[in-house]
Image 1 (cartoon, helix red, strand yellow):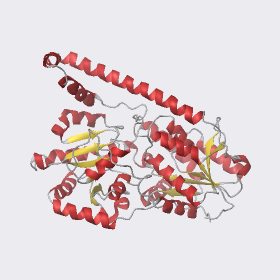
Image 2 (spheres, helix red, strand yellow; image 1 turned 30 degrees about the horizontal axis):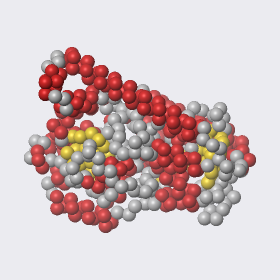
Image 3 (tube, one colour; image 1 turned 30 degrees about the vertical axis):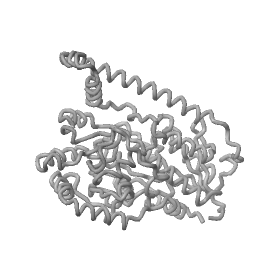
Image 4 (cartoon, helix red, strand yellow; image 1 turned 120 degrees about the vertical axis):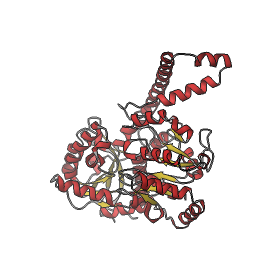
Length: 470
């Protein structure tokens, strides 16, 4: 694409702040990065990247290579993955399992002595091991943060950077935000001041407005922060871009209900399939045997409706012979608002092994899980898009998904759907697939023959068109 007089300045401050927590990239960070990379490929002379200055009152330019390098650091398979801050997570069940494994490795006499401990001593032992585990996690986190902070803050200045934002910004340019900046203080003021000073347009990519539409599934602090941020920023946006028609409709509906003035109609763009180059599957020891399980990829949080999947499997145990029922695998980190659910899993002894948690799988492990599962399940109540659905189809794996919000957009005609509020409907849908392996094989073949992945180049091209770039 030939050079245009108009430049697009992409605000990446939220990514650098996210990196400071030492976490691996989430869906938002991965999506934003892939879109940024595709935008650079299509308009290398016109796409530039920004961070906030130390006072948070202006922007400074950074090179995309700095973002690429940081993304690679965060994406390493052995990077530490931590739960969200200020969230209490029930780790007692996993700690008990760890203790059992340790006890089973001891000599018989020593193991017997430990088993004779009374309940109070057992509880004390559990808590002690949990405390040691959490201390080890904290120490690893501190080391990770220090290492990353040095790379982020003290890296060598870019030799290629010749001009700064204040010199190059010109009337008619776009300030574009593709990330998650609702945790940044005074963001609306910064945008308004900058756009007024340099006569810039402002564009925002919205993933969802779930904290506004369904606050019961969000942490109260997130809901407050998101509401304040959205009400401050939305009226400033000259072009609202969304990742689905569902999110576009949600924004319009919310604006009408709250008498919020927004400029124009929110417009969805096609979302690319997959992230980066496919990794070789990593079949580690903690993964179940190939073909023996059904996969549910997601952070464990209330909105994702893991409780429905658990209830389905509990019902199936009374319907199907145990040996015919595959294991239900939850792949993802333990999130928020699920302490009661995690305790229920422990109380039920994880259905005697028919439910398994693969916590924070690496990208290689996730590839192995997709390639070796029977099919995937995604019963979420509310989504802005549905990356696990498209990811499943991209691997050629059948997906049973909720019929709610954007998920039918993500899965199209190749996925199958059920009502996430109806246990019997969901149970019937899953049971039919399990009892018809020949039909499942045919479905898998149809996906591999007809699924068309969307390239990130298509996503970037649609974004450039919406901004009037030629």
